[in-house]
Length: 123
Image (tube, rainbow, N blue to C red; front, side, top):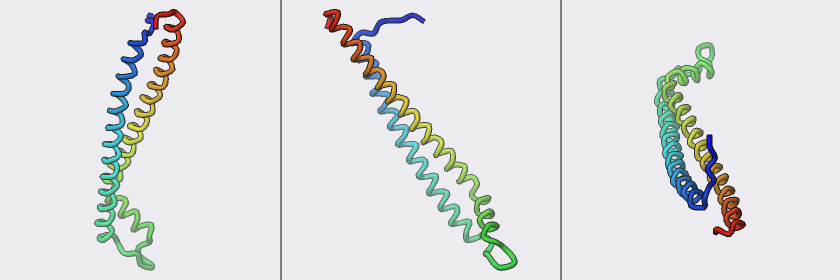
């Protein structure tokens, strides 16, 4: 790998690209949050619908635990969709965080490059 010294113009180009990438990352996160909320709502609706069909808790027959297990089994697909949506949201948050950290590093480089150019009398 060869090292190419950065110019103020190159640093500015990197910053502009990162601003664009941050905007995309924020949009991805917003979409992931919407999908997660939709999945939560779908799970709640499915649980409500299945609860009407679930065995009634009665002494000597069905326990609360058995009833909950019946409902959980019936809504497994919706639960899985919610877990996947949560994972996607967390991935989007991580991506946005990484892009912000990259922007911070480039800003630090920009200050160093600017100082170097000022010392050299090129700025």
